[in-house]
Amino acid sequence: MTTQPHSDVPSGLFGRYRLMIAIVAPILALVLFSAWVVEEKMDAYRDSADLLVTAQIARVSQALTRELESERVLSARVVDSGDLQTRYELEVQRLNTDERLKALWAALRIPGLAEKLPDTTFLITIDQLETLRDAIDLDATSSAASTGYSRAIAGLTGLATAMAPRDLSRVISAYMDPVSYTHLRAHETIGRI
Image (cartoon, rainbow, N blue to C red):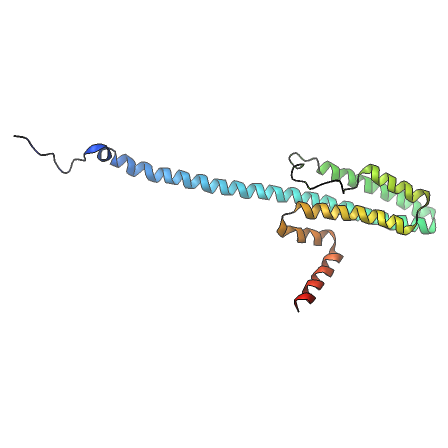
C-alpha cells in the first residue's frame, strides 16, 4: 500500500527554500533601500561641495572687487589732482589689489573646478591690469580709468553669478553689488503693483 505524502511537508523547490526566501527577501530589500538612500546623500554632499567652492570663489571675487573699487577711486584722484600723497596711497592700493588678484587666480586653480567654470576670458588678468594702470599713469582721463575698472568689476560679478546655481545667483549678486540689487528689487516691487 502506498501512502499519500503528508500535507504538512513542503513539496517542490519553493517549499524547501520557503524559510530562506522569507529571510533573504527583506534583507535584500533593506540593502537596496540603503544603497538608494546613500546615493541620495552622496548627491547632496556633492551639491554642497559645489556650493562651498562657489562661495569661496564669490568671497575672493568680492574681496578683489572691493580692492579694484578702491584703486579706481584713487586712480581718478591721481588723474584729477596729481597729488603725491594720493599717488603713494594708489601704489599701496595697487599692491593690495595685486594680492587679491593672485588669490582669485589661485582659487580658480582648485582641482576639478575648471570644468565647472563658465568662460573666464572676461576676468581681468595681471597683464591686463598692468596695461590699464600704464594707460592711467601715462595720460588718461578719470572717466577712462573708471571705465576700465568698471569692466573688471563687472567681470568678477559675472563670474560669481554664473558659477552659482540658479537659486543662489541672486543672493551672490546682492552680496557682490548691494546697490544694484536694491535697485533691482525696488524695480520688481514697482512692477508688481
